[in-house]
Length: 335
Image (tube, rainbow, N blue to C red; front, side, top):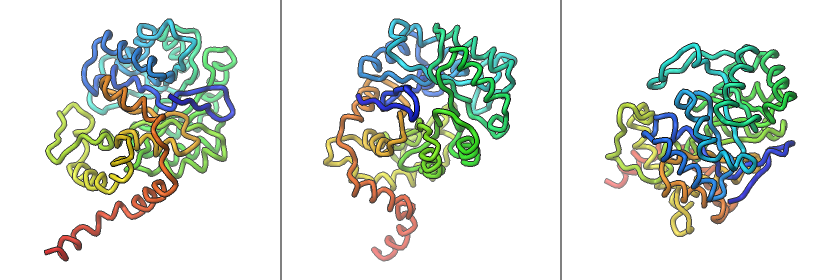
């Protein structure tokens, strides 16, 4: 494992982090506390020290699992969690893709922070993120004053903004970096979905904002396991993707074979290395479902870096939509 430090801070992250959502949110299968804790401990044993969770995952379970799994290693790990959704006033498990109401008031943020500290079994949070922040949160002077207050009190070390829930939120991300001073911006970004991530990088460079990347494998497409026969159960978030996403995605993977075939790396590792080629990316947070996948992704930092030629070829393919529009003409010519 290799490690990076967020700009203008002493906040260090393993280049591959662990998104605790996969083992606690219920969207990627059901994990017992014992199974989830075992996977987290295995991650730590592989050198992963950055764990990203949220108060809402499993209605608090995403935080409660941390002291169960790694309570004895608190000084050796970095805990990142999130605030913003008021599930306290809206009890019951969230279903599907619906969101809870957000609350950015000083009273709620301070209350939610105290609850997170209790669940995490700690007296400080390393990185406190605004969970799927909209423009109203970015516009709120009171909110950022509250975050500074929590920092002065020692309850949080740094704070950041997580964009979502889906890919996008370009205006919010750019406005946040232009108008606010914070440590980390969490975005969806990958080889197949590079926008608006590409727009965030220059702004992050100007403002010395560290980037955290989730969905680095494009909802599993870049893990290399899908076929045209792949289907997803109704409760799986990937079932909301249109069929054409699968068809086109598999065609794009054919054009990306040069990144991993004969290169002593898997497609999933190459996808992570492509992200780590950007120095501002402090950590990559792949979805980790089992030990085999954990071992594969945790080893990614140690495989060979992508070359300048490979990076240029990726950029050229993306700028031309992987040349998918040329396929019908090519097929006609062939017949």
